[in-house]
Length: 122
Image 1 (tube, rainbow, N blue to C red):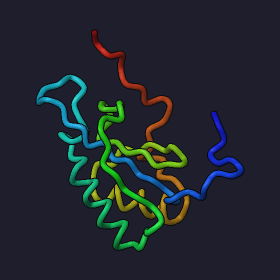
Image 2 (image 1 turned 180 degrees about the vertical axis):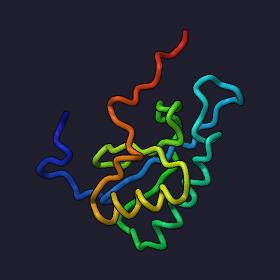
Image 3 (image 1 turned 45 degrees about the vertical axis):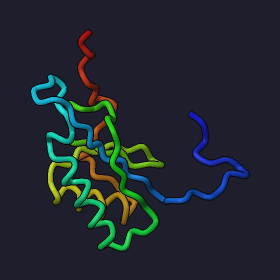
Image 4 (image 1 turned 135 degrees about the vertical axis):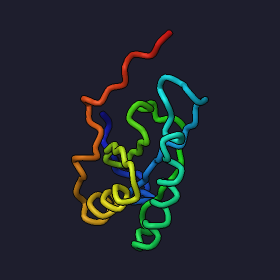
């Protein structure tokens, strides 16, 4: 994997960038979708709470499918590439505080290399 930054690169515009999957699939799709599991409301809450906490050096963005639908709602935080599956505003608060304010992690909400979607059906 390439280095995160190289000599001569401009400084990062944000210290952290959070992508929240807000993809919506048709009702009854076998993989489900993050939006159907409430990701849009969680994203809106996360944006508002980040602002309340004064986290001006990070950005929360809506994304399309992040391809971990079965575990949704999902989000990923860069530059670390840490994946989470928040289910409530309390989970979002915990992620914001532990990961983005304190620099730690929330292991109980993390998706790991063991969380692999089942093979896609052809």
